[in-house]
Image (cartoon, rainbow, N blue to C red):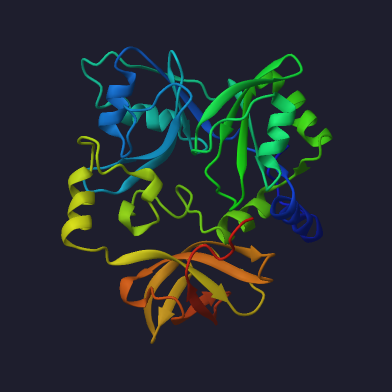
Length: 336
């Protein structure tokens, strides 16, 4: 079930399925790292921005690996199992993440294996996603994002994982052996989950104001420039980049913020399009899509703090012309 672009009419129907009932989205392009060894939690806890050490088996969290300047090197999801930890990386970044973490590994007993491709990953999204997942697998994790439990579909074991609401709706990830992936997806579709492609998912997640790595948050972005409450623990011990994050919280501010833009017209701006106020560039679009909920283009953009207030009028360079837009609070659309 690839994430290829679909005709507009199909994309609108896929979008509506997630907003009104349930869709299924292929996430198998994401990378996987498997971390074993007695120091696995201690090591990841010292590297990442969130509290990994306190995770019990069946729990998880989202986190970032920062550099010493507080800039985001990668956004991760960490799942704690009885005998290992599983780290979900953005697409094509498992090897790079492994290399980055390995540079800090000295005497700790933590062993990394790139397990990308070992598991199929699909995400049910929509108000009916939790109920459908429970009917299919016989399992349902806790309400906390990235909690997980083991279920089964037919003879296939499935890890049932609570998503974080990237689409603005309830989400459940289904993780199974790669060989069982097609059967799991077929069972979900037979039970009523509509296949959802890349274009519809982009519309959903931008409407929800969800930044993704590396489009909206990446190596040039300070973590406090984007919504980051679920990525950081202020009560844990030290981690890479912590001093910068705490200093910004306590004594300063960032000079730009990730904000929403609602555009006039019908043309969706390209990533990197300039955002202008009073003939001065004050930011750039990081990602954009057609909003089927608002029936107009919407975008995420990093803009100067002075221009970040909702309702501020700006201009976006679209197809070599200026298109009027308004800064908006995120999310654009609140899910059910």
